[in-house]
Length: 237
Ligand code: ADP
Ligand code: MG
Image (tube, rainbow, N blue to C red; front, side, top):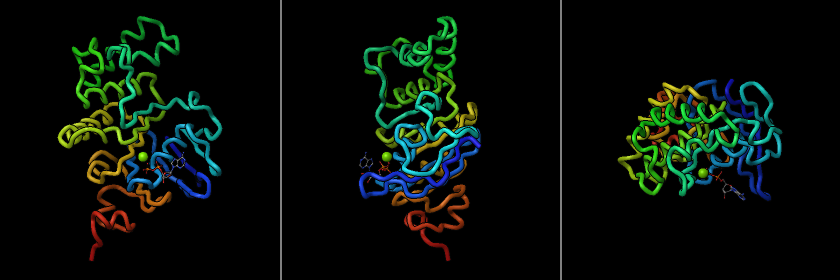
């Protein structure tokens, strides 16, 4: 199993942001975490990443108990809605950043960076600065940077949320194709049901800090069980 979240809860004061959540993400699969704003998606992602500690429950990554592992030891690739690219660094340098911190040999870094630039289809743009790129191109740089250290898990929090509709749609199918090549265990957070259905192998639907429904897009269409799923599919007769 790529990721196993076992009965995890996380509260802020009296408020339970994540309430007894259990999910499984198969190795190499792409699971969409879908739910309305405030349903606990980002908190759950931060718990998986080790950016938050659970009040109770356990988190396993590739079969190992990671509940008390540091963020670094978990080997996570993370992409957020707002590109956290370094403005003063070129595309190449942004992608190389993590590799340089880990003191990877220079020749190896150069090779890996070119490989990643090709993977995210930014050939010819390696010497540009983030301000010289479109929003979609910036998120592709962020993705390349997240993949640079060959993470055991890739976590994407509304990565296309700040982009306009047309670019979003293009990136959706692009991400799907990329994942078919890279096969890294991925959790993709979104509040957009179309996006979640198109991109993922399986969906986990959250609402009010709880998992309401789990299934493939087809299963959700055939058996919309949870209130949130019914809100966009409607009950079947
Ligand atoms: P989502 O990503 O689904 O929109 P979040 O996980 O960001 O939801 O937030 C779930 C709920 O937890 C929200 O009501 C939010 O205000 C609350 N919350 C998240 N982080 C914190 C925090 N650090 N302190 C207090 N409340 C928080
Ligand atoms: Mg969020």
